[in-house]
Image (cartoon, rainbow, N blue to C red; front, side, top):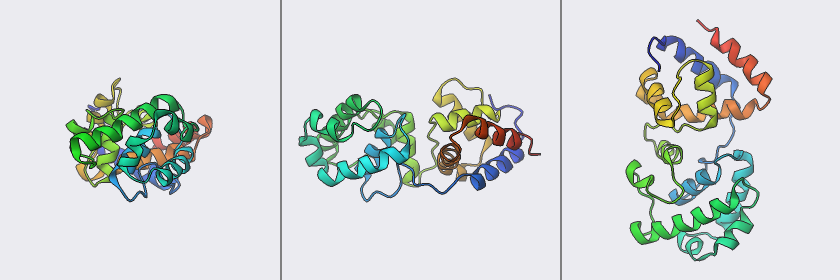
Length: 207
């Protein structure tokens, strides 16, 4: 848990992480429709954003509406997204997600956490990253957020929700929506584990 954490020190550590991370486009960034944001984030799970983004761009170029995506077959979607990890499962989710958005929400993405996590393939992280992109103060806990938060001693939570709650208790609410972007950009800038850990060791020593 985050009890006993020096919150001012954690803020200084976060500021250093933000400076060290390169300004990379992440999977949730730069789309012109909510459904594209949600599907791009879903597709990025366990896959580098730099791999996911061009694949998502091509998918949305061919299937440029929720209706077209819902009418595509799983096989057609799978063939288009086979560069992302677990693409067969993701193709199934993408199609089912498009169908559900049409059936239940007239093709619009709900901006409500409880409704989002009921959608096919959408878990806590995807829902929270989507909502943060909409300006909501939510924290998407992915592998980068989880790793860095544990390394710096901000949390010892085992579940996403525990990590999320620990981070919420440390950082002011106005920063929650930025946390995923800051930590993921740092994590994707330093992909060599030794280099990343050396930098995190220095950040750990910040007073």
